[in-house]
Length: 366
Image 1: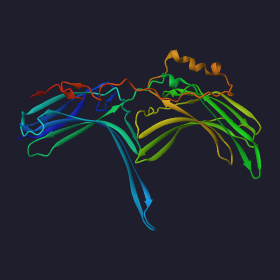
Image 2: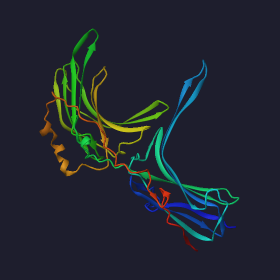
Image 3: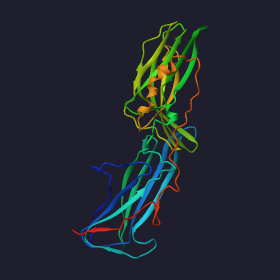
Image 4: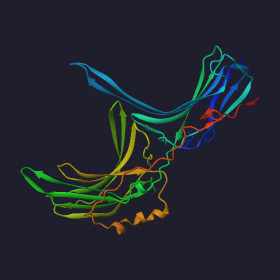
């Protein structure tokens, strides 16, 4: 009997062996390639499509006076697990004979619009991943298996009304020095909107009143926060992305930021629609106070993929439209964009093949 010389999954969208990228509602198409150098018998050829979110981390806990135990925290959500037989019948011992040469088995799989799938993601304690697996079963032979990943991109449109709303925050503190307290320090900050795309600049508007006896230094920074959920526990990882610093504000003085710009570097979009992994961004405007805790305010931001449309350019006229009057701060909605419209199921059902649509076998003789 012959040998299998090549067994691969080839995506039609793959270029130069790179992992292909898709969005919800698109078709994942490709073919399974089987090359044999002589005739072989095959019991089954199966293709699986899987998507999941997975979280795992460990913690050390004391279990006695002199010993520690390692506790594992794990959580998994499976978005889909689907298989289809390209050769063979479940439970049957019937075999199919493949002649020598190259054989191609096309497939197509539609990704659901709703419920919306989270984008591909990889973090220190978890990931969201999607892949295809092909398995070749032969009589009296070990099963041959191949796995190929594909990337899912979540299209986040920052033109959604909730992401165009200005964001505001304020806070104040009083510095105590020994038995004496100086006057309060106050910070009020606004940004034009909640949604941005990489390469844009966030224009920051702020009012600083320093009634203390110390100078303070205004700063602003973008932070990425990842929160992993497993077994009713959380593991939070925060990373500084970029920051800027202003001129010191002396004791008894006030200062304004009238559109100070902080450029957004290349960033992965905000992770949406995943209940066990959160990956979000925030802009923190803060005052560094020597020998005391900083005074800071946080403004949530969403990093999207679809940039601002010209019709929404009025957001750039922020200082004219809203001015620098911070006496009346409004509560703006922080609702994230709604997902796509619901469909009947996660996969398209075609010719009694849920999810997959097999186009039959194409055999190329060498």
